[in-house]
Amino acid sequence: MRWIALLLLAVISGAGVIAFTAPTSQQGGGEAVPIFGIKMPAGFRDWRFISVAHEEGNLHSFAAILGNDVAIKAYRDATLPFPDGTIIAALHYSHVPSEENNKVFGDPQSFVPGPPTNVQFMVKDSKKYATTGGWGYAHFDKDGKPGTEAALQTCAPCHAKATRDSVFTRYAP
Amino acid sequence: MRWIALLLLAVISGAGVIAFTAPTSQQGGGEAVPIFGIKMPAGFRDWRFISVAHEEGNLHSFAAILGNDVAIKAYRDATLPFPDGTIIAALHYSHVPSEENNKVFGDPQSFVPGPPTNVQFMVKDSKKYATTGGWGYAHFDKDGKPGTEAALQTCAPCHAKATRDSVFTRYAP
Image (cartoon, rainbow over all chains, first blue to last red; front, side, top):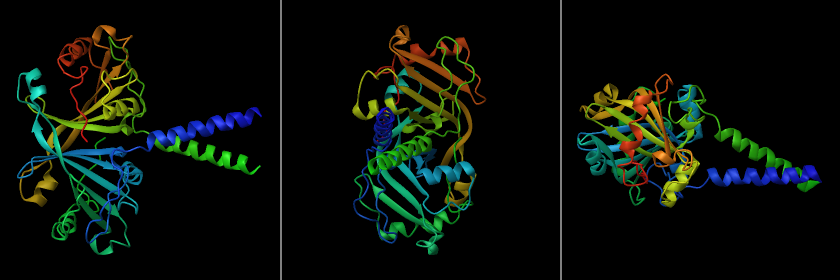
């Protein structure tokens, strides 16, 4: 019976790992965006890190770019075009000075994420989204409300100008 | 025998999950930093996202702040002080304009990570690092070379000024 006990232990440990890596602050679901029919993917806040971004101009925006496992593998293997199943998430925040940090540093040098503004996704499905370069696009505001049809129509034409399969973000090593 | 087969399947699946979440672009190890004796932790590039940071002044630095599972749980549960076993990683890059993005946007608005500059760690061990607020500090330059003793001596006094258990970074939701 000893090996059965060991098996049971392994099962329990395995289940523990699954439970520990699966939880998320974002449960996904909700309303789908127009045009592309994408809902917020479950667990994206637990995805791995691709890069950071900072947009000035009228945006004053800070972003973390995260990817699902397919995205991370494609980036690390330099696979282009990205394979079907790739999802890239951009978590946007306002770009604000940190009063606490600047007091310590004695210099107004430190900027941190302010309140979340929106989260956006690129979903690769070369058949379903054949007319938009193989990518579906989604935008949800800070309350999870999907972007408008007019707003979503602007995604693909702009991303088509990126030199690597419609993706602007490069992998930060 | 059927439940044994199911158990075996579960064990294999469990092992699959472990293998799938473990790979890393950074294998860890190498030389330990002075004072705190910390080596680069294996797999930190796969850790989950805590926040982003941008430092101007003399730094022009972009950072991704990632945490091991203990760190992420503590942040999400708002546990203070952070429990022993917490490790927080700061992956630093230069903060540079993106020529490709700015050409598309028609405005010099877009900043992205340039080459990596260094990676830093805070390791919580309330006994081992009792004299420095329970935290050990590590700095490795872009080639993995540990920071000097003089540089590492500056970490704890500055972090002690942070209002939340010596940690400046807050969790970006």
